[in-house]
Length: 98
Image (cartoon, rainbow, N blue to C red; front, top):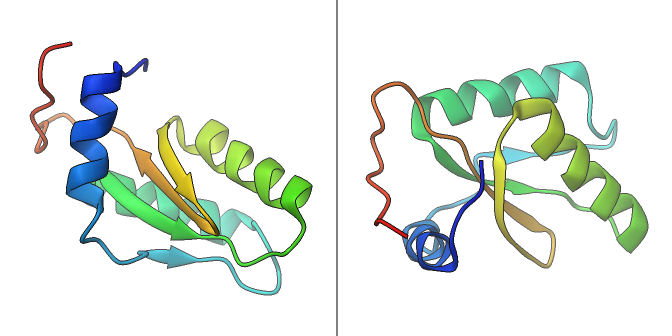
């Protein structure tokens, strides 16, 4: 899904007050973590995920893998936090038109 800049700004505003729903542990990105992220996206549509690693390349690879595995759309990254969006059937979040 491709988001316009206006839609991304809207989602960033909604995500500002959110706390990370999922935090990766020492085992990194496991199937269980991906399943938990998938479940959280199905329930909330917009979530934050904390990826606590100091290696920038590893962090980028993990974040890209999360987006790919969950079929979500990356809204933004701030430090160790990834904001991801995936609409559900009910479309709880009404995005502005382009």
